[in-house]
Amino acid sequence: MSPTSELQAELESASGAYEEFASRGLKLDITRGKPASEQLDLSVDLLSAVTGDDVMTPSGVDTRNYGGLDGIVELRELFSPLLKVPSDQLLAGGNASLTLMAQALTFALMHGTVGDSRPWGQGPHKLICPVPGYDRHFTLAESLGFELLSIPMDSEGPVVAEAQRLAADESVKGMWLVPMYSNPTGITITEERARELAAMPAAAPDFTLLWDNAYGLHHLREQHPEVLDILSICAEAGHPERPWIFASTSKITHAGAGVSFFGAGPETSGWIRANLSKISIGPDKVNQLRHLRFFSDAAGVEEHMRQHAKIIAPKFDAVLDTLERELGGRDLAQWTEPDGGYFITLTTLEGTADRIVKLAAEAGVKLTPAGATHPYGLDPLNNIIRIAPTMPTVGDVELAAQGLAACVKLASYEKLLAG
Image 1: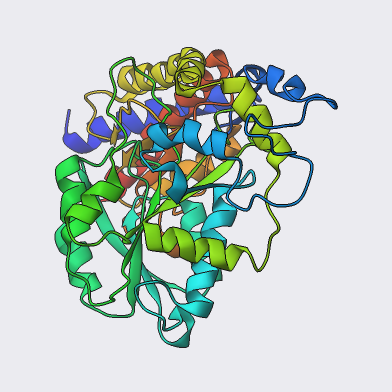
Image 2: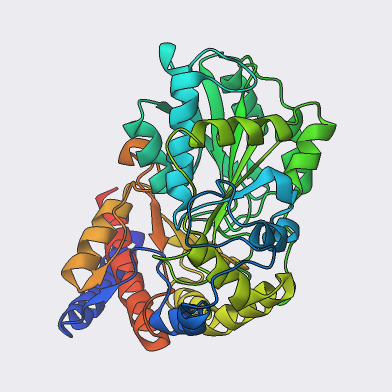
């Protein structure tokens, strides 16, 4: 049989399998990294952790009242060793770290930073974006007027040579980074790569690492990397104010009612306080007290995350096993096998991602739009698809992976036959 005939036969088989799957009339959604209800149930006791007659922190702060811009000290002390940020350089805020990112960037645009008093917004302002990356980072920065500059990621993190080339431009103010279990690849930056970024020359005197440690505690396996002490790494490199560290409990407790964190060097911590004091009289300290009582200590957080892993690790395994069974050895796609976080990245043949997403939608499997992992929604190779396995049941996520594999086969053989 000729190669063309073999491809035609594969296409016919893939088309039949796709039609069979589509005929089931399923409605499956693996678009966003939301916790499942079973995960949210792990934190049900949070809702009763503070009662009407017991609202005082251990240090005697009435959480119902104004004040406490930094957040309650005991919660900052609890998360300090987990995030590798000294408690006096760590702020605890409301439920969304994305809001803290927006506030910090807006302050820099309007007022400058501790490294340079010139407001970023007075001239061109750009951010480096390792890709594939987090769509909300890109959307936020674009909405604030930043020009977004893509650089590639490898298995150790962002490619430093590309970042340094771009950072030679003074209008390049910083770089996004999800250092642990990156969204969407699951890559964890190595300490060596982090040290290179910490020491990297940059034309902007206040070049900033937007260090979003969103998944630093979200391990799937018992053996896992440790959170890097990026503040110490940058201080040793002579750039103590370079990292702005963000984190939250949004996927740890209740996604809509968590606590966010901002950590930075000593001067930047003062800078964010001074700016926040103009727009806030303090965060929701009652909710912070709930979290303090619910966890008690850092070990309580770690045990809680082990319970999360028991729920979601089988879902990741179901997707990975299905992809290997259906696509392994076919040279049609590759996928990441993360040890934590919330996503799997599927890399398909060039030019097929949008077709796969469209086929999947028509067959009842909703995926994140092709291109969402890149600035401006433009994936130049059109071959990256993000998979979010956490919210569906194990059975549903396995079905979704089966449907996705059928779409990959159909779109790939169409592409190969078209030449």
